[in-house]
Amino acid sequence: MAKNSFNKVKAGDLELKEKVVAINRVTKTTKGGRTFSFSALVVVGNENGVVGHGLGKAKEVQQAITKGIDDAKKNLIKVPVMHGTIPHDQFAKEGAAKVLIKPAAHGTGVIAGGSMRAVLESVGVTDVLAKSLGSANPHNVVKATFKALGMLREPISIAKTRGVSLKKVFNG
Image (tube, rainbow, N blue to C red; front, side):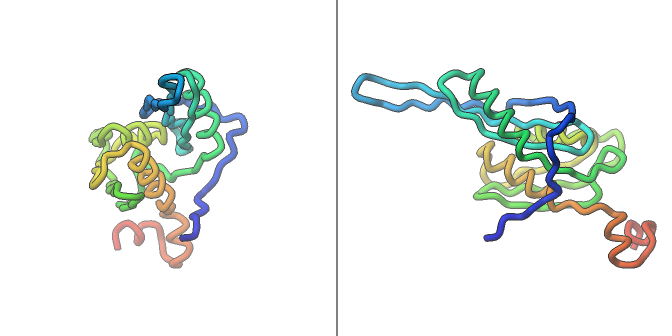
């Protein structure tokens, strides 16, 4: 399947805040005993429509988090956020994880579970209804959430494409 090229953004001089979504301890048994290493799933965002996720692996937790942050800064995307919510409903699937995101009225808050909440808060969405269906694996839930956010379209661009007013896009 072809890889989608979403609205990619360069890290540049953006002020990004990082959130650790999951830390996993990995054990490798060798002849000399057990070797422990850690993997960290990290989400970074400027809380103004730019977000990225990354995975870091290292022998120590702090190094894994640092590597995850560096990886996340390479995978930044731009998400359309309107009045603290998303412009329309979106469904996405990654592996066995399915994600449904819906816009919500002002004052609703972020109604989402664990790893989805970290991504949506990093984007800067303040009001949204989200449901994680299927697998609860944080890696796939984060990837599915990114796929859903990447597929969101700006209402202004839709109005221009259709040749109608912005009011007509929202009210039909």
